[in-house]
Length: 111
Length: 112
Image (cartoon, rainbow over all chains, first blue to last red; front, side):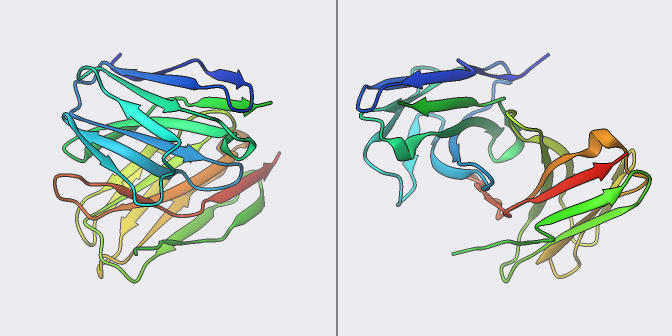
């Protein structure tokens, strides 16, 4: 089945230690998104790639970066995680804004 | 910026009851999406609506795209325990980017 896969499902990192979350897709969608979701809140868009073009949301901290080496993969890098960055991180894809599909998420814990 | 007002925030119902939740906005959307999210999982698409006035069903779920394009509702008939979860509406302005604007969610609890 075509899908969006996120690895790992659970990630524990130390305060200030860089961490990378990964997302892959077999849908051949041209747009890939990263969302942050804190407990009992709606997902919040951090940034997205439209093809190779990177689009950052205005309120996304500089601590968050992203890479998309090819159509299928996208990475979320958190350069210096703080306690406030503990959250569920969701990857999603779409084909030019249609067929929005989410992965199962990575739960990040910062200790 | 665009905001979606989703209500109710939470619901406690008896198994077998019908459920209704809605989203409203001061902005016009081209697409309305309804998602269900189970604990520790990503949102799963339930119903997508693309035209004003559209009424779409998916099993026991029915959703409508408001005629003004500023609102949508989701109904669940004859609820069962596995309906428990958080339901999110999401509006999409459309265009080539098509970023989603999410409501704050409705947490549904079903008593057997």
